[in-house]
Length: 126
Image 1: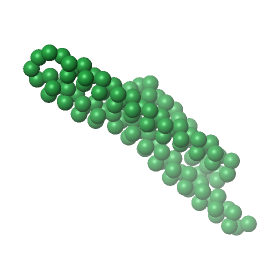
Image 2 (image 1 turned 30 degrees about the vertical axis):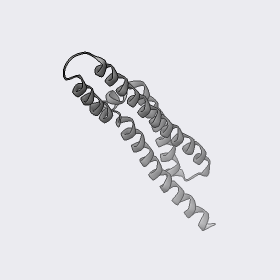
Image 3 (image 1 turned 60 degrees about the vertical axis):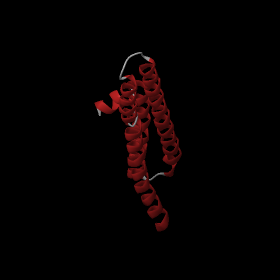
């Protein structure tokens, strides 16, 4: 977990963590209670997690390409190879926001599905 946060950047990953935990908590509450009032908040929080994930990924990719460009411009032999290595490693690290954010979205969706099933079951009985 700490590796994901370090690789993705502490500030962008904190947004994903906060929004993800709020959405996860709301979806857990919805799964337990099955009350329709929570659905709007859950939907909004999943959108916040999605957009924070995309923004963090874009920021990471931009930082990677910026650093690789500076390495490419440095005089000396082997610099294109060093820049290529930086790009590959940077792109690998740039997947960290996606891993964390989409994991939150998957678990939130699963809990919301459980809550919807309970809600549907309750409305069928009436």
